[in-house]
Image (cartoon, rainbow, N blue to C red; front, side, top):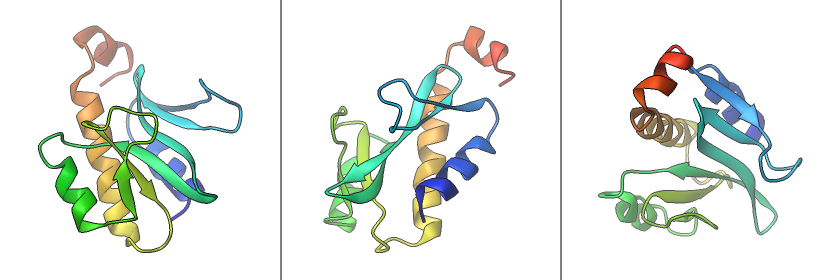
Length: 118
C-alpha cells in the first residue's frame, strides 16, 4: 500500500477532496470540511494518520506494534499513525481508511452533509 493507492481509494468515496492545508508536500484527504487521512512519513517511511474508534484505538496499536502508532501531532485518543512498511496487508490498511472515513463522515453537521451531497 502506498500514498497514491490510498489517495485514489479515498477520493473514490462520496464528498471527498484532496487538500494541502499544512504544507505543499503534505496531502490530506477530507470528507466534507473535515480531514480523515493525513499522508506523511515516519522516520523516512511513508505513513498515514487515520482516525480510529477511541474505544479500540489501543487494541490496534497493540496488535500491530511498531506499525500502528499513536497519531503523530494528533489527538492520541482518536488518531493512529499507520506506517506503510508492508507489515500490514493492503486490506487491513484499506479497512482502517474506511473506518476513518466513516467516523469522520458521521461527525459532519447536517448542513455540511447537504452541501457535499452526503
